[in-house]
Image (cartoon, rainbow, N blue to C red; front, side, top):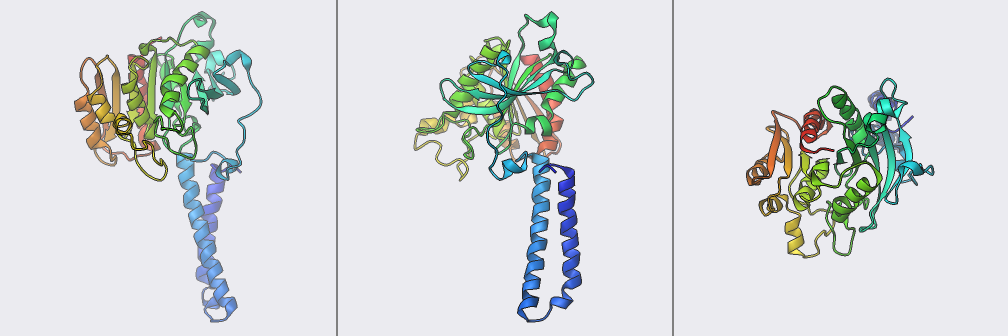
Length: 369
C-alpha cells in the first residue's frame, strides 16, 4: 500500500478511533498505582497520539504530496532509473522514463501526448534536477513534425515534488483537455520543483559560494529545453509558471530575464525571499543581491520590454493580497499585467486547481510557437 493511498489513510484513521475507544474502555482497569497500570496508561496514550498524528500527517501528505512514496519519506529514494531513451535526450536533458496520459487511446503519443520523466543538467550552474516534460499529441503527429511549440516552465512550491504538478494539480490533463476543446494552443510543459539543492530552500537565488539556482532556471533550463525539443529561442516562445515559491520564482526570473521569457504567471506568489531555517543565509550580506530577490523592487526598476504577467490571490484566505495589488500598480507599459482574485481561497491545491485552467488559457494567448 502506497504512502498516498486512501487505504493507508483509512487504516490510520481506524487505528486512531479504535485506540481512543480502547483507552476509554480500559482506563478504569488501569486506574491503579502499580507500575503495570501506569505503564498501561502511558502506552495507550502514546499509541493513540501516534495514530492520530499519523492520520493527520497522511491526510496532509495525500493533499499536498510532500512525499510520493515510503522510500521518499524515509530518505531512501535513490536514482530515478536506468533506462535512457537517447532518441528523446540531449546533453542537457536525459529521458529516464515515459508515461502515458490516462485518456482513450493515450497509449499512442499522437493521441494522448506523452509525459517524460527526465534529469536536467545545467551547463553553467552544474546543477542536476529531476523533472517531467509534457509533450502534447500534436508534437508527435506527422502533420506537425516540422512545427515548433511554445513551452512553459512550471514550478511547484517548497517543499513539494515535481510529481505534485502531475498528480496533485493535473497540469498535463488540464492542458490536454483545454487544447482538445480549442481553448488553448498545444504547449510543452517542463515541470520541476524549485528545491534543486534539497533540503535547502534556495528561493531561485544565485547564492554566493552556493547553488546557482537562478542561473539554472533562467539560463540553463531554457537552453536545455530549446536544444532538446522543438521550441523557439525568442521570448514569445517561452513562459514561466509557478505556485507559491514557484510563483515567486516565475515572476522574479521573468522580470530579470525579459529577453528569455515573454510571460510569467505567479499563483499565490509571494514577492520577496524569506529568511528562515529552511533558506539559510541566501545573500551573505550582499545588499544588491537581496534587493534583486525583491520582486516588487525588481518590477519597479525593470526596463519595460513587453513582458506579460499574471498574478493571483483571494479576498479571503490568501496572505499575499496586499503585495499582489502593489505588484499590479508597479507594472509599467509596454509590460502588461492581469490578475485572478478569487472571493475566497487559501494557500492550497484546491485554490490553484481553480486558477490553473484560466491561467493556461491566458498563457496560451501570450506565448506562441
